[in-house]
Length: 486
Image (cartoon, rainbow, N blue to C red; front, side, top):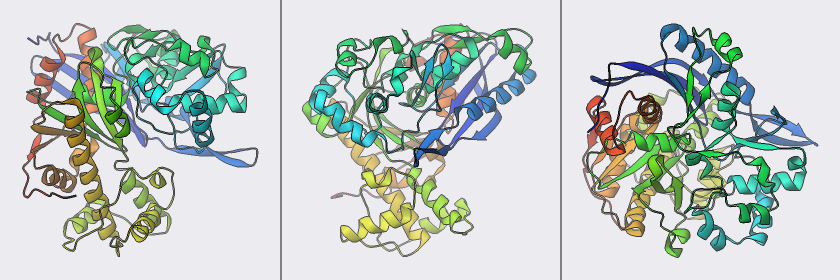
């Protein structure tokens, strides 16, 4: 049974692919509460490399924003017990003697495309799936590292740190890799959850660049004195490893009270799946592009990546770049009022991965597949939401079929849980209830793992989720109609 001490406070640094935030999490007998102290944008920057544009993360500016947020957190809560950092997956920085060699590449950069064939020439897709259990995504870390080998970038590197591990290193001086995020690299053995050294050797990577692995809930270290001074903390603060892949933290905070649930962690990406005790490595799972990623407490996140609300946000960016004024609430209201049938397209089509004019690409897709072409912004948004709901429903159904897990309810967490139309469309297409929220599931999961590591709360994941359910009551969407023959 979950027990709690008197209320104590930890700080969650939650970094997404479009924005970041620092949240104060209060955990005590009354439950969990969150208070944002900083929000900041996070977007890629284009750099000129030998006359070709490349896409990178401005990780130094992101770290500056994190420190500014922690400065506010330390001022508001002088007794801050711990800090935990989560982020998106797969991207990393290369270091030599503790110094970063270049800004991390953005996973949407096109450099990995030739590296896929080079990698598969050494280890084919079926062999890789048997070793790492990961779905094929052209930007998985092992393909990015192959691109680095080709470019000669690994020649000078003596360490590779994934984004949250890099920030933890800058905060504490300790270089480690937390397993939930390391599991997305393609270089962790799916059964042992250790670095797959034979695969690393075959792909031509130096074993020494990979840091020691740790579990979520491990104390990494204390803030360096310079960081403590920088944020104005009265004393040094622990930094704790949490489920540093943001989806791993989000799944911790799914407010499920029974085991028969699937989850959709919906933001820039839509991660659709179930939680298991052991990986599923069937050929059917590989063909369906399902992945076995590490979860907190050794669980397996058996899921499929869907393009997510990137389709909407990048479309809005395109319209605004063309001079249109977009009010999201008005746009979603207009999409909900569309009564004519709209195109349901494949949200996973690779043409939608790169930044650019997504409305034009969606219309091109519809034209090529003899689908109704959206005539207005509202119709295009409705088409996006219907297509996402369809992809989410197929993902849940496939996860249930491939894993053998009976699903009776779907929890939709993250920013997408605020999109009422998307939640209702998903319930309609599944014919199952959808429980939406909490919005800040990733930060909540981050806070809970820190709190448990600090002894502020105890219990299993199921007991932690019951605490979430008492603190954040989800909104229920009942299927209004069941859509079949998709």
